[in-house]
Length: 425
Ligand SMILES: NC(=O)c1ccc[n+]([C@@H]2O[C@H](COP(=O)([O-])OP(=O)(O)OC[C@H]3O[C@@H](n4cnc5c(N)ncnc54)[C@H](OP(=O)(O)O)[C@@H]3O)[C@@H](O)[C@H]2O)c1
Image (tube, rainbow, N blue to C red; front, side):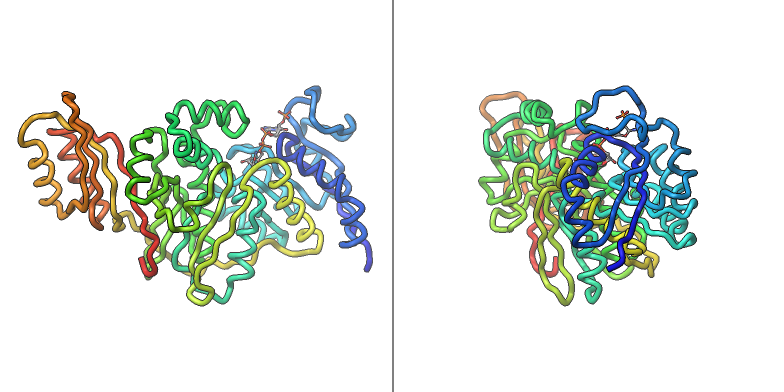
């Protein structure tokens, strides 16, 4: 086989860029022998040329000027691992315009600039690869775009943020508070010093936008994804859910019904009998239904330098072989559906006086929301925690009733979705 020589420019040499550098070094001989591909990293863009780094990179290939990579005609492949929306999205676009293929780990840049980046790659006939951007080492992008092409994918559920899954697993295993579990995640390097993007659901929403777009062959914009984070979860919610037979997960859910798509990320009770409930710690999993394949679940490491580098280097090999990136076509227009049906767990703090319970039940009933089970913990407090689970109800009806209850009768402490994961739901 004729050897393919590829000169590569790195954008970023942090956790992921450093991991890719190390993995390429470790696998160099095997990639050359097995794939007949020789990668030479010609330039590496960083912010600080003098920073101490975990990898030993010759000083003369480091640069703080992106033009040194974008304007170099010998560099035909760019690996983007800067992070953030800008300037990353701009650099990716300029690299594609310059006729270079791009491998990126950056879900935010992709989810927010998907259409223009895709159009630029198609126009220039170069590849745009992003396996690493969704669930690290798990080959979910290739699975959806290559292996499941003969399917109509109708439903997709994912635990696609390792930080929140670690926090919720800690809360469940140790009855820890949210603050203590977050602190532990930060101590272990599993959560950023500013954890907002993870704990408020933004990171998972970016991944869900990408996954839903690919699965449903229709552009699902980030702005169309409903998200609610985990910051209000208490040990009480976790333990009550367990008593009812559920594990608490930050679940990404997307479903297609006709030309309508619902895509949402929120705390969700998942039945303890379902395989997603066993995905704990910082692991990720995606569970989907294809009309021909039936149920399918992929599980693995969704973050970390080596797991993510595993996906990046595989994409680099695909790009070196001349592939143009994941094969997908956005064939249909869709409407985002924000009035789905679900069961709900609701925790209120109600004023402990006669008649309150009846008044709450009557507001819910008026909005067509019926209660399946309820628990009240009076314990002589002024404000009694009241927890109940509804039968299937529409999101808009639940929101309207909670607004009314919140105005007059109780503080709404938490709302958790209950996903029974039954066939056909
Ligand atoms: N960490 C994970 O487990 C993981 C998993 C999957 C995907 N990702 C994605 O991978 C990407 C990179 O994440 P990371 O954890 O490697 O980030 P990181 O450790 O903060 O590294 C970012 C790198 O980019 C450089 N950089 C940032 N902004 C720059 C700018 N404006 N100009 C020049 N250089 C710039 C930094 O330079 P200096 O070193 O000089 O500061 C650093 O080398 C993100 O999109 C992230 O979402 C991360």
